Image (cartoon, rainbow, N blue to C red; front, side):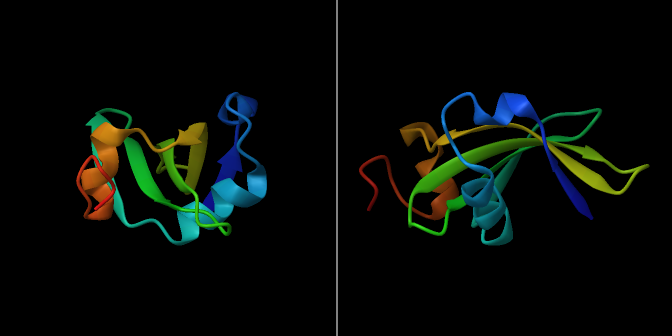
Length: 87
């Protein structure tokens, strides 16, 4: 599956390298709405920063469109297996 990172994904200053690293090593995900399937993926980038990535699955073209990336918000820590304090 191809990964396409849209310009909107850089709004919070997250680099392409961090986004791709997080997607390769994500720890949890949550379906936000359907259709098309939009997912919030939580994981760590190559520097150990906890990130959240929002992506839309384009099944017909076998690609993932990354539309948003930012520092992981506390409400989604559970996707990493942690509580709101990061424990």
